[in-house]
Length: 192
Image (cartoon, rainbow, N blue to C red; front, side, top):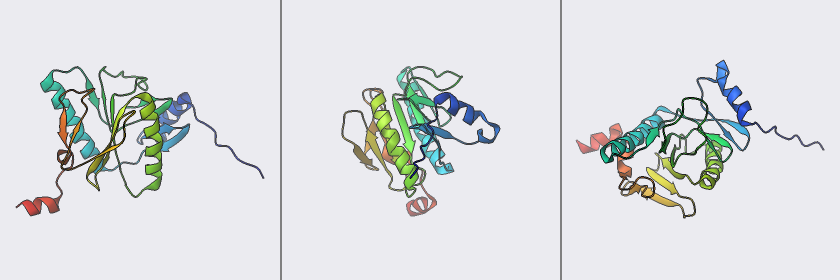
């Protein structure tokens, strides 16, 4: 019996792959040496941009140095390349290549909670984020809740009645989970 081993992709090979013309319009990550296409949908982008907006406004109002980015960036995290939906960092990112400093906060919005491959890839990423010391919020828009993963701590589940904080990196920041999710047409109809 012959066992076929998968070729592990290096970061420079990954960079070459994503720069190909046919790959430029898609998002990819490098997880454990494997190129993974990042699923997305417009609602995920709306939720991510809402979080970006809240963090950005907090930074402006609090006069705290720091920067928040959307899904366009790539970070080398524990030897992997991830593109979180939202990332907060103290230093301004470069305009070339991947950031070699992991973000202080990464937000991953689940695109499809029923997609087992996406769930598996996310769990693989969480181990690397934890080793890098990154606080991670995993947003589940179907369940309307957020998993908070902090290195060395147990996972905390925050529902729509709760608030997210990041005291060690954003002192004084609070975000009501209910503010993350836009109201659906059905919810708006119930209010009227």
